[in-house]
Amino acid sequence: MPITAADLLAAARDDADRTVDLRRRLHRTPETGLHLPRTQATVLEGLAGLPVEVTTGTSTTSVVGVLRGARPGPTYLLRADMDALPVHEDTGLPFASEVPGAMHACGHDLHTAMLLGAARLLAERRDEIAGQVVLMLQPGEEGFHGARYMLEEGLLDAVPEAPVVGAFALHVFANQPGGVVSVRPGPMMAAADHWEVTVRGRGGHASMPHAAADPVPVAAEIVLALQTMVTRRAPVFDPAVVTVANLAAGSTDNVIPDTAYLQGTIRTLSPERRADVVASVRRVATHVAAAHDMEVEFVHRQGYPVTDNDPAVADRVLAVAGELVGPERSVLAAEPLMGAEDFAYVLQRVPGAMAFLGACPAGVEPDAAAGNHSNLVVFDEDVLPAGAALHAAMALDALGA
Image (cartoon, rainbow, N blue to C red; front, top):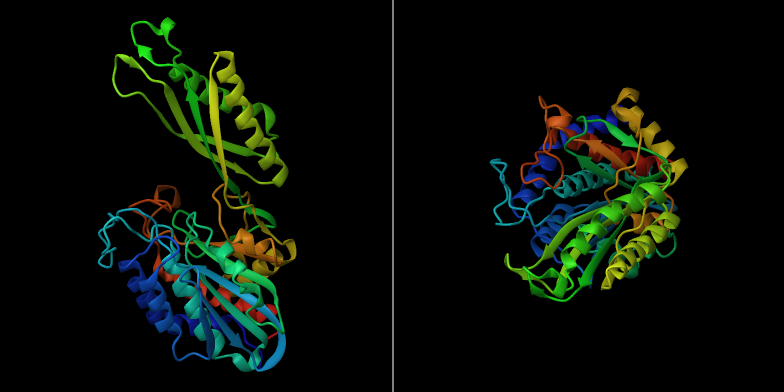
């Protein structure tokens, strides 16, 4: 008898207490970065007793589980991230973070709980699976390239005889309508790059700027020139964001400093625009400074690539989610999000998709809800069964169950 979406969602709801409990345990004890020993221990405890072959990372505290179906077939990957943010929680929730300066402010605790809920659903339905499901539980998504480390350690060869042929990930957002799944083909999230500019002038007395080489107005001119550069070089259909997020110079009111420092981010949706904007930021900073007889030191650090959804997989997400939560709650995302995600590294290697799951608390308008990364963000736990069921349904759909 085929597995129906209704049956899968009902089973996830019946199991909701365990999923919520795991989420709250993770929320109380957040860890940041690539090494999450308490989180890893909680995840391993959650997988114990399931028919899952578990391995842990060597360079990070990652966890990889392999669930084998009753019949041979391809391998499908489901991913969740486990790390928190260096944010002090101020929600007042009864299960709020007990770790000062750390908080699950991006919903990774929900992601992990949903994936372990999906593992339980799939374990109960092994007889319907032709192939294997790889459970990817990664640290270090928040800027630490955790997915890349896992790939370097052989993630996609977790089942040597049947390498991974597809992948799926789900990300919750507190300011999107609760329970609504959204996805789009092509770019779903942006590439992210970090840049720094140090303008090198010559210090002096603030009353005699003509006798110095003041880097402060040059830095200000660079800020304005970068905004003009974006509007005049980036096509509206291949957009870019350049934000100056930090500007620092000087130490008091009567001294012209030697240097001024700027740093910020670049967000783009194509490799071509990414390369062009990085080069343009360097060029603008260099030549604005040169116009004032100064030099700059430019530093660029490449971040995550574009999260690029395979069109066929995005179509399947819409169809599967439509059966699960209803077609009115499975929608085509109108535009990409200019945030970045290291699931992009997986999507560079295998066809797959990342979808969004709205988790705005009941009774709150999405536009008024605190967003991801806020110290006040609250996610609606009622979406956890739908998220667990969607993970499982995507694997079952891919593996012909």
